[in-house]
Length: 310
Image (cartoon, rainbow, N blue to C red):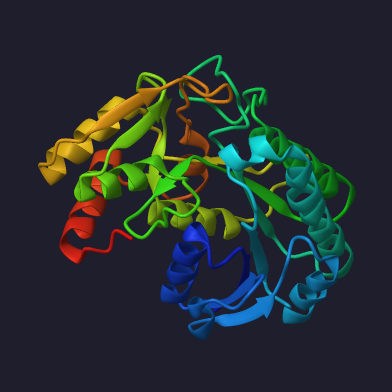
């Protein structure tokens, strides 16, 4: 049994990751700004990206590995306040890397963004070697954090692995952050609420079930340390592309409810197509995701049956 710490552990992905680790017999420590109901299920410590002193709580917890998910913005909110994105997320992440490298050099899985760091793709699916050309603030900050992570890895003994996560979805994803098209669309279709799409619906994204994504993060954590000169960077997605129109069509078919859709101007930071190559993680581990359609069907049926579409 290992002892893992998750920053941002009460978020959507963090909660899924905690469940999967616990089911495997591992101990889970949630490191968040405030105690959540999940803190009654797992050990909890205070950690705030804005307060460097709280990193001491992570050091004192002595985990065997750290999953760094804490991030205070979404692609949309980062555009409205770039300075806060840097001051909170980037500075807080660098402070964590610095303290871990000095005090507790355990493996760290940093969850970056496969959907924003690459920018407009030269080739699809996108391999990890593709140049990073983010066009939005969120992607710029994530890509910068990656560069710092690689610098820490090269000059210290901190074993940072990077997971470039695509677009996770699931039945219990909160609508509060307005993030997660698959979950939000399903919830709105079931409630027969209108859906607003930026652009004409042709944008293609790589969607992945949140539990599949969490299993991939665990697989990355449990890999043997990479040799010097090898960058442990892994795309985490389904490897399948789905347009927004096709996404709506799939949910509609499963739910037998026709959506009401309004189209508006496309956002400047939305790239036309993003599909991740997952060849590397499939080669280096035994992890495999479910098909997007199967996962969407399961989520839609769960929402219909449970009524848990808050």
